[in-house]
Image (cartoon, rainbow, N blue to C red; front, side):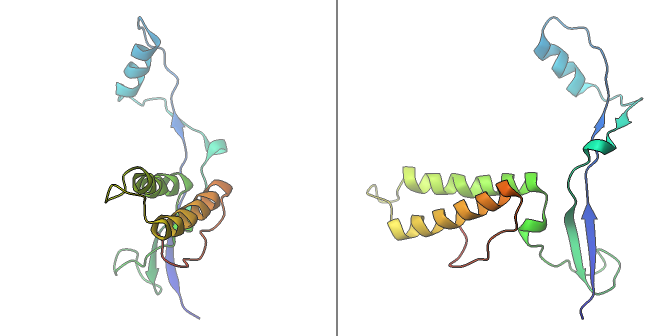
Length: 138
């Protein structure tokens, strides 16, 4: 049996409640974002995020002492997975909107990638693991 050292993380929201004097709502929001004084902050453990993997190393080693192993994306943070997949979906949209030769897009090229992208997007939305890579991901 192989040993792996795994670093996992979860996020705890930290918040503050403070009053700001402003003429408009947007100005009050800007003041709150620009305010770097977090004295009196509170941790919201009840709203802690999901646990996700941030590092994996082969063996029983000190993290970062050897090269990290690639982490399958479905063990990453859902919000980050969505952001990364958005880029893939944008690329597919570009294939549809701007075919390279000015004619119709190459259907086998886009159909295969669209199917893989849709399947992965559905997995992300439902919180499932990514599908097995069959036929190459976009």
